[in-house]
Image (cartoon, rainbow, N blue to C red; front, side):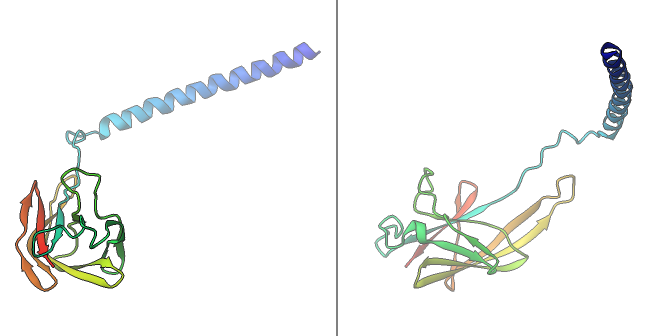
Length: 172
């Protein structure tokens, strides 16, 4: 009797798996057809994030870097944008070529965008980036920011090309 019950259960399970297998095969086939016909020629397109940075180098009258000589401590520098965004660890001393520079990603709205750079508990500078915001139609819908002008603490600055990014040197 025990053998009959086990055999009946095993036969029922085999039937269930066999019918399930047919359903899975049919579903897989239909899914492959849908995926095959939904592909287009631009599916191999890889979208990238187009992002530029502006680096701020703070120096004294003799040209000494004020972060390097620890007038300002790298770990204490904070950048804020629109009171909604706060960026810490903005000085990358471990990255060759970027040591003792404040790094700020260029983003914002069309026109003036104000960034507050807190150098210490008692000193905060203001960086204003005037931008054009250009949205490129297409499969990626990329946003490009064109830097029109830079103002640091009320002084117009001329950014230098810095390997595709921008660099301003501010004398304090």
